[in-house]
Length: 322
Image (cartoon, rainbow, N blue to C red; front, side, top):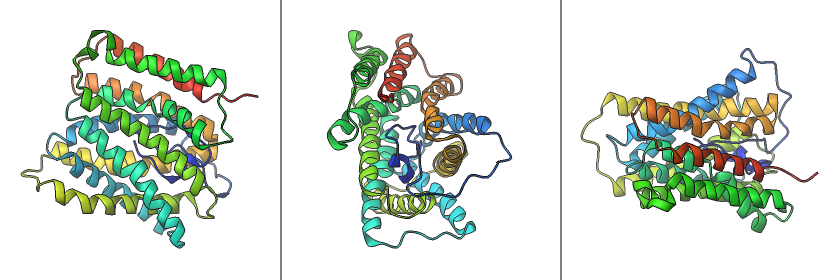
């Protein structure tokens, strides 16, 4: 899932890595679109849900950092192309670029890399479920970082319920169901990184006067630059380029990072941010289904049960007092 700058302007809830979105500035009124928003909503859930499968297939041939760099390159290419077609410009203020540099690390370079490393040792189904914990981390962090976002007893109960769901997914009572603790921890840290990044963006980039597309293109470009510097230092050139892994990286970037932002941004404009963020709850369902039926990953009873509990907790954390 791809997270971009527009995510946290009004909401701290996520999707895979996904931009949850609202515009930092007032954008033009949405035009009626040829494809119904419900179809685009389901398409977005499929794209983000399959992103975990694409990561798994990509890491079969390439190092995790190489998968992430490829993802960022193709995602950036999509957004920059659309930016040029719409004749919009990248941000100009140095202060904005400084904040985008931090946002690119917290919302793209770090979590994308952590998920890729995690899937070396854990199934894509578990990675997709771990991604659904981002609203729980967002809730906890917003209590400290956002004075206007005070918790209610219902939201705190949601956090407790959500983390009980995480323990259920991992099978804590039976030694974590044989899952790799390091890989699982990396996936959970990636989800927490999204939460930190959204709060950072919400505090620093919500009123820049730049469009969401402009900020997101700049953010992905900076994330690509970060990975382009780091990747050659820690990886060796690939020895082969299997077509399945290459296409997975291309799809992960062009679809799961570039196109997904554009689809979700359109959903926010047409259906509103509340509807758009609900895609979060379908992503782990799609990721689990894809992992089981496409990759043949094994699923134990506690994983879907725990995932449902996590999603219920996440939904509670998004409620607001009247």
